[in-house]
Length: 137
Image 1: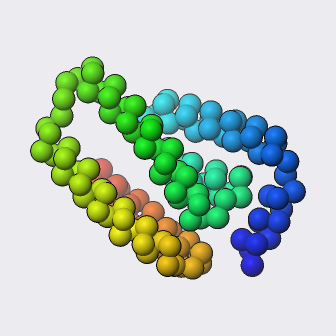
Image 2: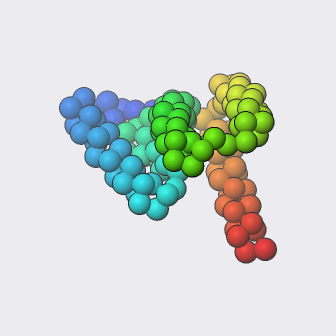
């Protein structure tokens, strides 16, 4: 129900205004991420769902698609400046990322928006706890 109401509200917003919102939000996220060295995937997800009114499934796909190009550009830059990484580790990371992304996509496509929102929240809490544990223990 809430997602339907948000869609109705966002459908009233003109395409021009949504384009301006997209550019402004993208610039802000890019600046913040570049300034503090953080990944922008979660910030992009927040903007896509709350400001631009995307359904969570569409926002996740859009965010991942955008971050693919950002990550590729960053990786090429780091490789050019600092040399190549350990290729075995790189290949393993890519392979497992592709496998688990496929598993997660199947789950997301079958899940209701409510379940998907809860799963996303649980994952973010777990990630926060792990980061705190790694930094302080």
